[in-house]
Image 1 (cartoon, rainbow, N blue to C red):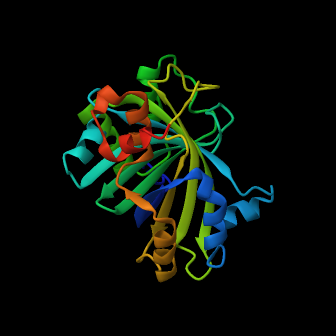
Image 2: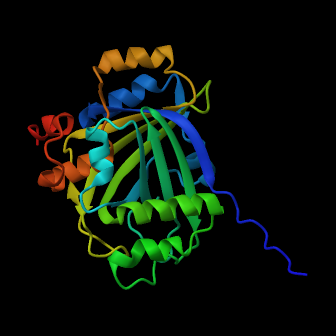
Length: 266
């Protein structure tokens, strides 16, 4: 009798609300001081025991030749999906842990599945154009999630489009551990990188500004509404991927008013 193979491990999955705000980088120390009575550093950084309060985030985004995932936002389509490769290191490498992620957004509601990749599986491909097929053949996830990634790849002929990198200062709420505040600064990117492994030249984007993100299962707490007013925080509907592409290749997406408004301060 043929023994059925055990199911693959389920990927990380969650659903939550997300809001993004643009704040001048020079306000970061005052902003952190302002939220400190209500938040504390991310427990993950505390538990790792390295004394870090900041960690890097580096992602490679896949998109169609005509940048379909960006144009869906401009077209007013509320339900959108992105596929990206992410590591929490400054560069991708054979010894770094990486995750292939499907991120879905319906207005301000976000859900995400994270497909694990074993160490070293981001290497072994000779051309960037073959990278996504290479990764999809090596992910560790349930069949339905893998099938969704394969469908996105086929529908849009997804290709490596841009690397998006930044440094993140993370906090969680003292009374609501699922309320998260992250301060992402030093936004950098590369348009159509020629390689993945090792150092890739990155260019600064949104110079002088950081992105504050709120991630929660419920509404914004009242104390943070006061913070928004105190710092006159400007909410943005555009992703860091859109900001990088707009800065590095503006003709590819046309004019994104909410992003280009800040380019005058460069």
